[in-house]
Length: 246
Image (cartoon, rainbow, N blue to C red; front, side, top):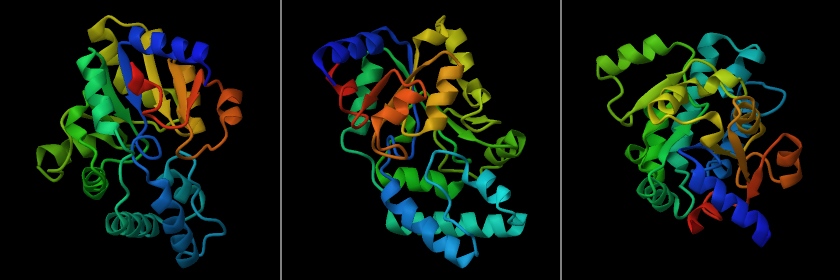
């Protein structure tokens, strides 16, 4: 990124009131474990191809492959167990970046297509990500009321503070519905929201909400031209590259 583009990015971040991040491939280096895990599970479950590491919902993809509900639960349980064992880590400087943005007065959150699961949250905690730094932490939950009751019954004790459920996954624009109460609370406009992600669903959903989409090359998409083709305003080598120089 040239000096002029970097100045434009810094200005955009200074003017933003809300900054949200995808989790896998953006804050947590999960690609290094997810790709071989899904290759192993595809062979075990007789799938023609491994689950794609492209930012889409894995449960939805498994449904499209014709797996029964029981097989999907078994697949996901095995996947989460293997993740725990292989322990992906956060990218260097992520927690420091979030603290810096919050010190600058930004509302900072996470928007992930992962569902609310005990093992999923445990993986994030074990990766070194401080989930309680965020003002909101949104997961994709097709049955939000079920998650709400699990919270009330203390069945998810490692759930982060300020957790919310999104009833739709990215790239559906409604995946960002949990951000709108914050937009109203802060008196912000969609143009004052930045979303940073590693996949095309991140960029598409952010663009359709008139947020500023920023791509990072540490996850699903490895070529910046692909991000720009789908509407990204900026593309960074990693999440801490230019944002950390504010």
